[in-house]
Length: 84
Image 1 (cartoon, rainbow, N blue to C red):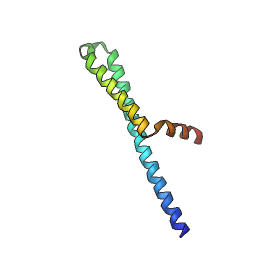
Image 2 (cartoon, helix red, strand yellow):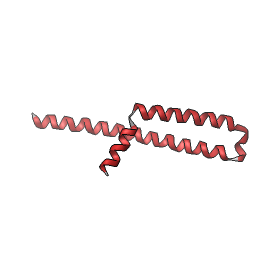
Image 3 (cartoon, rainbow, N blue to C red):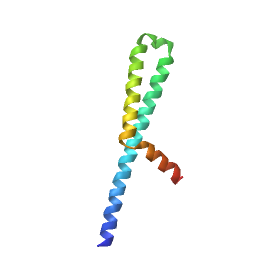
Image 4 (cartoon, one colour):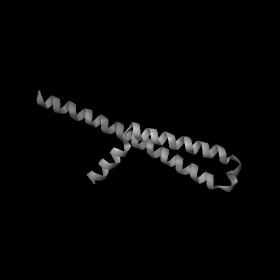
């Protein structure tokens, strides 16, 4: 019976690790989008849509902040550094 419990615990931890991995992957996509928007703000050929890009950048950063809190990504980053 104890082997069974260990097996179930491992699966739960594996699923949690998988979900956290997916959350980190999505957060990295948001970082890429933020960096792209920042680059677009500096492009002179996009000057006419600067307010729209700035608004999208603010919205992306707000989502990133909420996502970081909701999925405790700061804690994950610290744990990853400690494991290395």
